[in-house]
Length: 95
Image 1 (cartoon, one colour):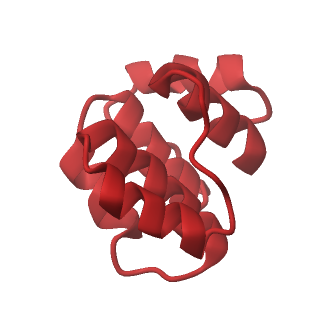
Image 2 (cartoon, helix red, strand yellow):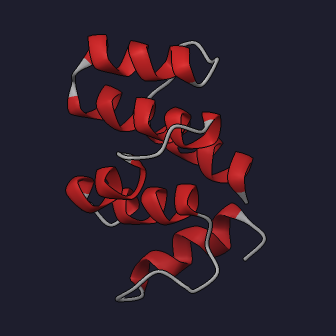
């Protein structure tokens, strides 16, 4: 998968395509509306990339304090964009 358009099209599939990074797999589940599965993918990981996705998920959940903690771990700042825009930016970052 090489583009955001292809990634979005894959959301019509019942399962994520094989070979996706854990970050993209998490974002895929989030794109399907399954926050719990998305969170489970990155919850136990401490690398910067996973922390960034984790931060986004907590921002989406409305837990801003926790989101800011994970943005800090990812060495990122909470963006001033919509959740949809952040999701797209993250997908493009990890594709």
